Length: 168
Ligand SMILES: [Fe+2]
Ligand SMILES: [Fe+2]
Image (cartoon, rainbow, N blue to C red):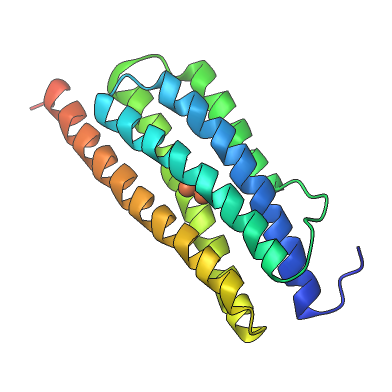
């Protein structure tokens, strides 16, 4: 694909975000299995269901502009997934493990938030309002998930401090 217009970039970025959502869907499945924290598992599992909708919203957004997805792999999402795989090899247990998983989840959500924010702006500029509405629905879920993950991370950090002896 040759990129020469804002619309070309829009199609490419939509395709990359569709790829990102597929990668994130698999990553969330792993994280939900790896956590030992019931509240975190519930949040990850709820977001797995939302991510299924994100995938169909991305397909619908592409369809709404009369395009089929470009063959694309989102290298940023793949990088986040690789980082997760590397981290889980060294995460042993307890609070550190949960915090590591939550930090990874937070970074992933913020990548999605940045991507959708820019895509919505571009969709509006291109007068692709149906696509913009679908992208906004995804962004709303990502914002809510980021908040939830960050709240859990703060809770776990506080618990971790209580269990660690503070030198006098
Ligand atoms: Fe998503
Ligand atoms: Fe997400």
